[in-house]
Each structure stands twice: as C-alpha cells, then as structure tokens.
Length: 355
Ligand code: NDP
Image (cartoon, rainbow, N blue to C red; front, top):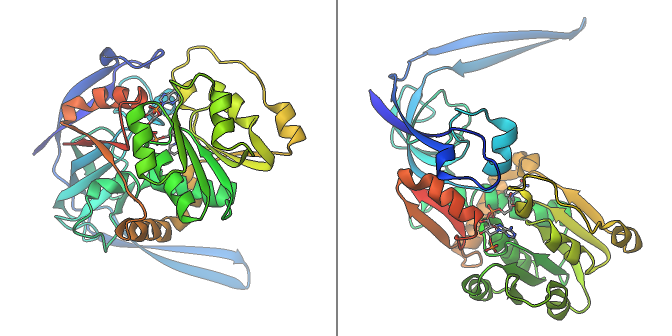
C-alpha cells in the first residue's frame, strides 16, 4: 500500500490566501485494480440506409503515480472559488512517474503530466493524464513540461498566434513579463521579428528580461508614471498587448494602443484576491476611436494543436531561442508557501515544486 500526502483547501480563500486555509492530509491508496481489457461495441444507426459500427478498445486498469514536480499557478486562486468545495484537494498539474501499473499504455517508469491536484501519489485510471512527449531530450528537465514546454508556454503561443495574430515588425507589450507565460510571450514575439516591451515587479526581473532579448523593460513598481514609461518605451504606441494583470495597469496600457491594435486578455492577476470588484476608468472610448480588438481566451481552446506546438517550442529551446528560468521550491510540504509566494511575485520564471 502506498501512502499519499495531499494538500486540502480547508476553507475558501478570503482575500489573499493564508497558511490556515490549507491542510496537509495523509491517505493510504488502495492497490491499483487490474480491470483487464474488454471490447465494447457501439452500434449507431444514423438513418435507415447507413449503419455505422465502431469498435472501442477500452481499459479500466489502474496505475499509481508518484509526483516528481508540481506546479503552482495563478489560475488556482480564481478556480478555487468556482471549481472547488472546502475539503477538496487543491487543483493542479504535476509531472509524475508511474510506479505501479496494470495499464500497458502507461508502463512503470514512464513519465506523465497529470491533473492530479496537490498530491504526492495518485491512483489513476489513466484519464486526465498525458504521456510526456516521446522524444523528450535527456538534457532538458522534465519540470519544463509544466512551464515553457507545457500549459504556460502553450498559453503564450496561442495568445500571440491565435488571438493577437502578431506580425513581424509589430510592437508588443506584455506585463508580468518575467513570469512563466510572460517570459515566453516576449521570446516568441522576438523569434517572430517583433519589438517587445515588458513590465515586471523588480529590478532583478527587469535585468532578466533584458537577458532574454526584450527590447525594453521596466519595473512598474518604481516608475514614477506608468503612462510615461509606456510612452518612452514605444512613442508610436503598441500593436499588440498581451494582458496578464488587468486592473489599473490595463486602463493605462489600453490608452497607448495604436489604431486597430489587438489585446489578448490572458489573465488578470491583480484582481484575483479582491474581495470587492475594482472600478474604472473604463476603456470604451479608446476601444471605439482606435477600433481595438480585445479577446479573452483559455489555453484549452486549441488543445488539438498541443502536440505539434509543444514540439515547436522544444525545438526553439534546443536551438537556444527559448530560455526558461525556474523558481524551484523544494519539498511538497512547502506548496502553500510557494503558491502564496508566486501570487506575491517572488518567482522569476516558472514557479515549480520539486518533491
Ligand atoms: P507568473 O509566473 O507570471 O506569476 C505571477 C506573477 O504575477 C508574479 O510573479 C508577479 O510578477 C505578477 N503579479 C502578482 N500580483 C500582481 C499584481 N497585483 N499586479 C501586477 N502583477 C502581479 O504566472 P503565470 O505566467 O503562470 O500566469 C500569468 C497570467 O496568465 C496570470 O494572470 C494567469 O492567470 C494567466 N494564465 C491564463 C491562462 C489562460 O488560459 N487564459 C493560462 C495560464 C495562465 P511581478 O513581480 O512582475 O508583479
């Protein structure tokens, strides 16, 4: 029998999360069931002259996963309110190793990315897990499957390509630019031949953005005027704005867009811990007179493209065009601290927990 540790949402967050909102639980996992293979025949008649027969090979055999790396992400804060009850295991993704298996699709020793929540060990029926890319290089840490070569990287790519439809020569603004999504956004825009301006919350992060090849970067916490900083960085304005933060930053940035600019609304981290809604200034007049396009998106919309997209980004990483820092917290026990630290901006690059 395997003993699992998990972090429970003890009570719903009120404002910024606190240590007392979390509880560490121990649980004995039962042994994985060997469901065996069985065939199901689904016969469906669409109309009298056409009879379609589909054979499904299904397998309910179970496996046990052991977490190797876990992710803490901003979405956990707003999703905790809409997707979780008090007492649930915290939602989240991890890279895990299969340690027991009755399922030939996931043999012992293989690595998967799973939506298992904040758990050290998981009994899984194989749903909600995906094998790490087959040709994952030996010299690339598997933790990147939670970052640049994972959900945050895909978010950056789809926000730029599908939502902004960014073109070479255009100017892009991205905030929370030194984080998991933002740092990839800026680098992909550089690969595509754009001018990139990034904002971040410390001088260390600004130095990192310059290292990554951002054309201009500034610390939004220390500039005397955000409007002036944006104007100085790009006097002619911005074609594309990759929005990670929302709130007052957004109001100032939207006013700096060029005519027919595109805004990809990816996140609003400045709003996630609010207990009452923030109010204007409202963007409508800028949107109308500059004929701006603003579109919110969720990364899952383009899931059908993920495999090809991950391979593309892995190639960029191997070519040295995509660099990815990680902010690694060691120890499963430290997950709440790592989560709260990320929400406060402690992380440069992707926030990861190494078990
Ligand atoms: P990051 O790695 O960027 O970490 C969060 C960062 O947000 C912090 O490091 C901090 O950086 C910044 N931040 C925190 N609070 C504030 C604040 N009040 N004002 C401004 N900045 C703040 O996280 P991710 O890269 O994983 O996520 C970035 C954004 O993308 C989030 O809003 C997230 O919800 C969103 N997202 C959306 C997805 C989608 O499908 N739409 C998928 C994945 C992420 P700093 O020091 O610079 O302030």
